[in-house]
Amino acid sequence: MVRATLAISIIVFLLLAGIGANAQNSKTAVDTPFFSFKHKPKLFLTLDRTSSFVAGKGATTNEIRTGIEFRKKLRFGIGYASLVSDIVTDKSITTQDTKLDSIVNAELSLSYLTLSAEYTFYNSKRWQITMPVMMGFGTSYFKYYEKIDGDYQTKKTDEGGVVLFGPSGIATYRILRWVGLSAGLGFRLAIVNNGKIQESFNSPIYLFRIRIFMGEIYKTIFPRGVLGKHDPPYSNQYWD
Image (tube, rainbow, N blue to C red; front, top):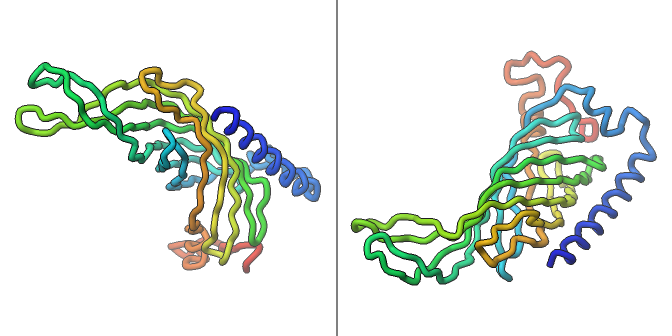
């Protein structure tokens, strides 16, 4: 699995690097990534949802992320992600009430803090191609329900730390100024895995989603800002 995901990542990186190199060859020096730092950063907030495989089953990861963006080319973010899975297994645990070993149904969980960087290789009227890279630091465990004093409580077992790494490539086709379709491919690699569980989080990741450009909606509704003081009016070089 690790070799397969590494191979996928290398292929994605080479494809994006080739596209990025061709795009950069036609641009001047002021369009290089480092030039973006000379521009004032802006805040961004995103909700991401990606799909992967754990223990041979489909699993979804939800992430909320915020950070700063330079000239719509470079992004640096921090976020929180969690795995939404239906991976259940039998676990032997000692109950608090009876002090006896019992077999319970336990669900695999993964949650982690993310640090990310994203570079936009190509951006035109219709197409946008980006490469995000993520590092994740968190925990994995199995959760189950135990009846204590007549009430069911959520418990954890086999908890341990994980460190994840995940590069990917995302292509977006803009249907209109305000909405587009995105597809992406990459992989998730557990650099440090939780030795207490057998399930591996190494997996290809993929996504298909509708993307709403909230910034463009705002500029269309309020071309001079909410207070009408933005001069000159907001514009989009491709659509105005």
